[in-house]
Image (cartoon, rainbow, N blue to C red; front, side, top):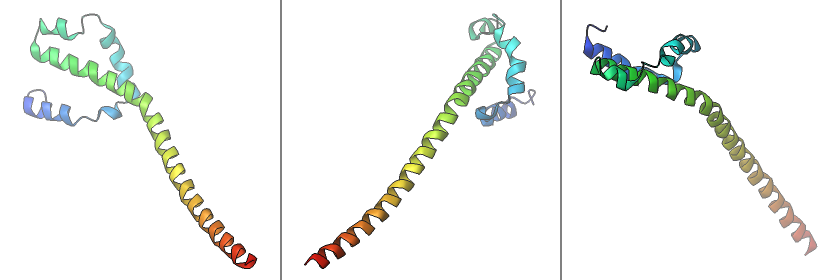
Length: 109
């Protein structure tokens, strides 16, 4: 795939950064901890390598943040749905109370 730059670039663009497995992240730890694995250092060797290094670094950062934020986002979405459901239930109860109050008022007259 790397011998075809267009295909390689397309695969990178399509890569789902939210689905980086823990195994891959673990395998990347030694690479990312190597002090020479920076955009600036790689730029001295090759601009292509530098850009790929930058993509890997940013992909891992994004994935790390995503894995922290996703459960919070899911919880917020669930809370919003629960709130919406409860507001719908409240509207039904309030309508029933209104009808009962009308009947009581009618009986008082």
